Length: 429
Length: 195
Image (cartoon, rainbow over all chains, first blue to last red):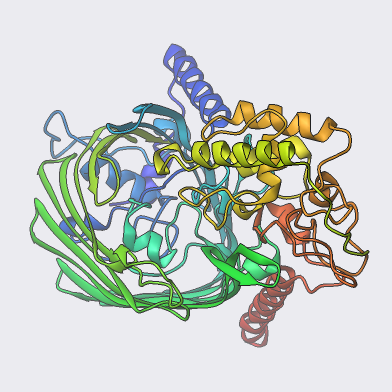
């Protein structure tokens, strides 16, 4: 596809349609900016069904996620969303412009944004239904001049105290209200056609880059793209048969004090066989003086009290794979061994089957197992997830019903959690 | 600081305290379904503490749900309006009453009032802590342990929690990367100029 030619086709429409489109764009901008809460972003690993084995074809991030290239925007319009009528051989190619084709930025500039809301139904809780008007409200972009590139995201978010989501990406410090959120910011240099060096706050390269940020494989390895990004330097490589990225992690400088910052490395390497199979390995090692979430009871002369687990060395090493045996079916799996210096060894696994009977409509079956290992000095019996396996399953329907719009419903059954039904509306600019 | 002698307690007062302890213990250990995870935040808010206290301010261990209420501070608060699980309004009222009480509650009997300890107003200089524990008497030369566990702070303001002077690893990293990239750009252009 000729994206350069397509870029020139993204001019503003004329007459009243122009005013209407501008109004729609302004309304959407205002809606996104005024909306709040933190959430997930998108990266669709199952695009391997269309022989897209690498992510950098469609995403600005060489390892996938969020900001789309112009080619990615056109591709999304042609093969990601539902097509309601057959596209003729001489049909006009879609515009790569943002705001539903209203404006096409210069080639060097990529701009976009994302909005998601979320409805949550938990049948066993006293208040069973809750609506989060804006789980994600981000604007993001990248400027690419020659071999130099700079980019990042900015948005609004609101996380409750104690939440593990959103808070790690806060720019401002407002415990109970809205906060400015920045998940990524970076500058980098292209080192030839295949290598990219970046520094800043960047997605950690590890495992399958899936949109389900609360999947146990992402939570247990602390590698989701919702807010687990770290400040560091990454070097990525993308070729036809091999892709990978390694990151030297300097810590999350949007969290303090320094004792809570994790430092180490994270990496993945994926080999691509043919056009429908890819598999790889991941590895991550970090150290923090105080663990962000693990708490242990310390007893001394001053009595017993709760303290963060100290001097925590965390390791995760695993394998993952993607396979499209047929165009309509994609299977993905990830298995990671978990090691923590103060706990028994553990593991986390994820398997997903994505069936797309009609372009744009997905039925997804997901299974999970987690055992993070039990704290070595624990006096309590093993529990599911800590010393014993914990099981989870999702049944999901994902409908890309219109250009840049998606609706998704997830029914989640997780051991020791109430049955949960999630419904979300997602649109990107 | 010194440890005062134990006061003599009238029998009627002791009986009332015993009854109060029994009622508070029963009402606050009604099981995990009546857990009160927001209570530490309520205490921090009403007392205007610099941090959120650990559950062991009132409970035997952390986390507090399911752990019995055994700490003297809990009974000092309960004596000023009662305490029960999953009733933050009652906790707020009791705390407010306790703060206004005269004499002020001193659960560990070390002559430092509980709310002075929770606000950290008497922590000697040189000790890196926000509070002291109102359930543990102050030592001769060292304060009792901080009742607040270290907690992460979120947002860019968090980057400045580290004491001065400190190295800004992020700026150092970005500076090094920028210098490297400039050097690389100069190096790539040099052959073109020569050519």
